Image 1 (cartoon, rainbow, N blue to C red):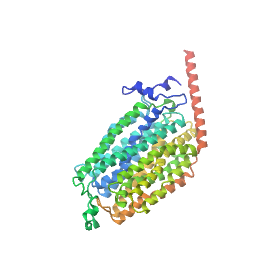
Image 2: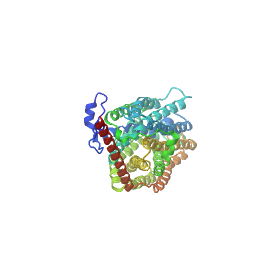
Image 3: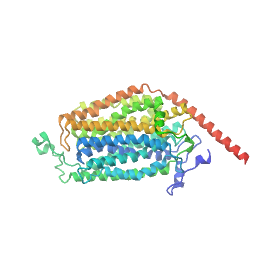
Image 4: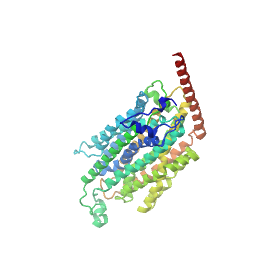
Length: 520
């Protein structure tokens, strides 16, 4: 290995210590455990904030910020749709970024972090105005999504720059997915537990007025009359402050502990934005992979966005929903290593079918069985196993598609960020549509803001959103995966061809260097 490849970037006054911890071990591009951990920690902010927003933003806008369901649907759809648009744009800009002393991706990550945490904090602040709330939340939601895209797209593409070995990239991806799912536990735990300590009183509606106070006393916080809506708003702000601090810490660890490998980077001719679109969408395996995960991811996003309301109103667990969400994410974290072993042993396509279909029986049970807290915890734990597969598999399979593209297009290199950004674009846009439609559906069904109970129509709508609709979307996604052509044999063949290409390039560089030296 050349001295350039062995060089470790000093930073933050800790260069020597970090260098010892994450020096690349071998000529083949193997990564130390510390390098993989530092890389994995960098993925936590996206999942921590994304999970907090996914699980709690809808119920926050409706029951805490007191935004009308119709306007809440505009905020949720507008934010996600804008986020989707920024992904290919940022991916295009990242692909045209020059290589710097800190790498190609790292400057984007570092510069976006401070502004992102400020915008994230302001999302959870209720402004002292009534008419301008929708503008406030839509503006800061869109700003945060833009800045987080400037973090996450380069970070996702960083997979291709930390090692030239597919095995090492798969291993680093497994580390990353474990930490990211742990990030969902942290995001759910911090947001849920802090907010759960300050649940604001609900408002009795309909038949609730005919019930005795002891029947709905725990829901209206008669046992804790000191808790008000203002206390709940302060709890949301405290939780967002803690998450913002973790966001910054993870970004610092990523910057200090990971070095981009320039030998995994190809210079290429700049191309226009629409050329980039044609480039990635013209590769068949990529289109099939994205479309398959588009539907399966949309299913889990529908579940994520509406499960808190489902627990509160359909199941009646208003004071326990945050713990149910925590069990789901904790289960997903524990089973990530199992799915990494499974895809290595049986192949990635088999893992997709087994992992995604595993959640279907539990989605059926949760709406058919009579409401029972213990049974709900058991179903939630089992459902988390499938969610772990949904987290791991897309990011483990995307590098395979990128490698396949490189084999078939050896003259076009250096556009990895575009592939990742367009995948995120489609999933986020679909997420925005799903959240907007689901919140709008609740409005049409007659959702009552802060109500202790909801009309029957709302109950039916929530059941469809967390069970019937996700199952239908999962089935469509699995049908598309039947046509996905990249199997383990094709992956191995692609890796062999790319390794030969890299060896030839290194030999050419060596011969050129020796020739120049002899001339001198």
